Each structure stands twice: as C-alpha cells, then as structure tokens.
Image 1: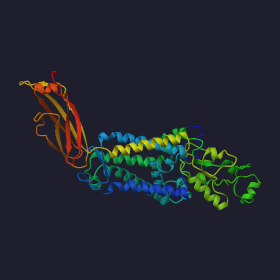
Image 2: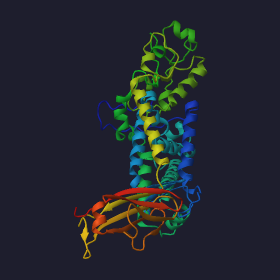
Image 3: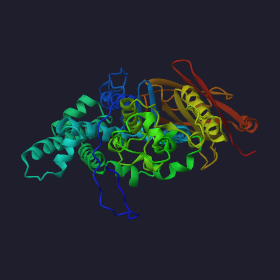
Length: 473
C-alpha cells in the first residue's frame, strides 16, 4: 500500500509513491494528451510560417520588438486587454470543467501532470515495473544495479528538464539562430539564466516533489471543493456495492464467485489494492472523495481490469455523482449540466469568447490619436493670425510597412502645416509622432470651431479624427 497517512501532522515523513502501470481507456486518453501536448510544445518553435518583416516562425515572442507573433496574428503591448480576456476565459473554463467533472483538468491537462507522467515513463523504461522500482528504492547505493539504473534515470530526467527549459527559451527568438547562439555561448545572459532556472524547477517539480505539488503547493486543490455540486462527476468508489454487509474480502477459496460473495454478505471489492498502487498521488479512493484526488481515472482502469478478471460487473470505481451514489439503486451515469452554476459559467464563456474573437477580427490595421498641444492653447502671431498646434500619433499594426497620408477637412487651403510629413512611411509595429499646426486669419478663426484630420492608408482605409480650434473669441 502506498497511502500516505499524516495522522494530522503536516510535517509527516514522505512515503515515496511508486505507481504501477495500468492499461485502460483513461490511461490511453492520458497518454494521448501527453504525446499531443509534448508534440505541440516541443515542435511549435520549429514550425515555419512566412512573414514579411520577421523570422519565419509560427509562434515567437519578440520582446525587443514588443510584439507576440502567433501565426498570422501580431499582438502588441497595447493589446494587453486581450491577455486579460484570455486569462478570464481560462479561469472560467477551469471553473466550468470543475463544476461538471471535478479535477479532470488536473488529471489530464495540467503541466505538472504531463511532465510527471513523462518522468515516470522514463523511470519505468530504465528501472522496470513497480516491484523492480521498489526493490531498487530499498537497495543501498553500493548496489551496482541501483547505481546504474537510478543514475541513468536521473540523467534522462535532467536531459528532459533541460530540453523543456531550452524549448521555452526558443519561443523568444528565431529558434535555429537562438539555439546555435546558446550552444556556441553567444546568446544573451537571460537565455542561460532562464534555461537554468526552468531546468531546476522542472526537475524539482516532476522528479522530486511530484504529488506534493498537487497536495501542498497548488492552490487549486484547496479551493476546488467550493465549485463542486452534488451532481458533479468525479471518481468515486461505490461503497455499498464494494463493502456489502460483511465488508470487502480477498478472493480466496469460497469467495471467488459473485453469488458466493453475495450469499456471505461480502461486497464486490476483493481488496487487491490495485487502485491504490496505480494512483499517482498515493491515496486510497475507497476512503471516499479526497481533495488530493486529481480525478485521473487510473483507479477506474485498475478496478475494471480486476472486475473483468473476476467476471463481476464493471463500475465499482467510476466517474459518478454523489447524488446518484446515494440512491437506493443508482441510475446510469450521466452528465448533469442543467444547474445555475454550470449554465452561468457556460454563458460567461460564450460571451467572452465571442467578444474576444470579434475584437481581434475587427482590429484596425493601425492605431491613431490626435492631441492638441495646450501650452499655450493658441498663439497670436505678429500678423494677427492665430495658430493651434497638434500631435498625431500613428502606430502601424498591419503586419507590413505602410504609407500614411494626413489631410484636413474643413480648413481653407494652406492652413494645415505638416512640415515634410504629408506622407510618412512606418514599418510594421513602429510608431511615428507628427507635429501639425493650423494657422488662420482672425476672421476665419472666429468662425471656425471644429475641423477634421483625415488619415489615409495605401490600402484605401480612412479614419477621421475631429479636432477643435481655439481662438480669442
């Protein structure tokens, strides 16, 4: 048994969790998510993507250029509202999933789970299945077999941790050039510091701390119970079926047939302990729902495999709701989504996602602003005419270089003075400030209250900014 009993002492000695491998539907799904997640993370920096003014990389965080390149989308610092919306959507989506499926996110999609699974897979490759790993765990370091197998495992862990950290760094530059610079010692110091820090933290979280990250460090495990409903699907042990009137019992002589066990009052649980052995956090699901459970479903696979061998019905350990388990005769498992909390999360998700997509899809190719210089508000010239000054700020967000033309509407000819900036070429992602002045004779100044700046792009896009003109009236 691997269950970690603390006895109420928060500083109890850690008992290493050495999970057994298991086959089943949930294990296959976890493996699919693992390999898909790793493929996306490790290959995305190397995916080519044609760009007119940036390296041909699908995803790159261009910190010097103050922009994020994500396929055809270019995100600038002023688009921080998108990041806020994305974080809000991610949080609500997590609450939405929790309200329906419990800690399913932790069991299948959390980075801690994915990397811990990968580290455990390496451990199994080098050291063997659970009995062999337990034997090596108890052996002394003078044992040559332990030294070789455990040493090889830890070297593989270090290599995976470094690869993970280095891949993260490659998102911040052109991957081939940055990798070459890192390997030849020519990369910026930040690249080496980040690689070292992330390598250490990845190794510590996935190789040393493991389930303690979920139990003691991650705050989600502590507050997720507030999002549970009686109808929330989570991993449960059917205690009435498993214990019966006389409790669970081993499948020894006279207690192997289902009818014999029922006749003696014993439940379907044969007390094999396999559900505990496969648990990555080392709990016994038969003790009831626990906050340390990450709802990975491996205990379901383990129990179903034993039920199949015994010829008993599956589902002694299953995803189910507390409401269904308390019924005299539980109904077939089904998803309960018709409650106020789930519907509220769902509506919020739809609205926020729709707004984010709309905002991204309707972003202009450039940003602009017109500000009047108010110190002084106007200037009285020696010939009696009145001059107002303005600043036009343009930022090119089109993805390529663009030529902008500035005109005025509502002013007499020659009143607008832009110096040499009637037309200005702006590179993608760059900004330009144009100084403009408007000079009118006293008669025309007295009759003019507002006029309009017109900003035209080479692609025919036009924006209008209204500006006021101040005089002595």
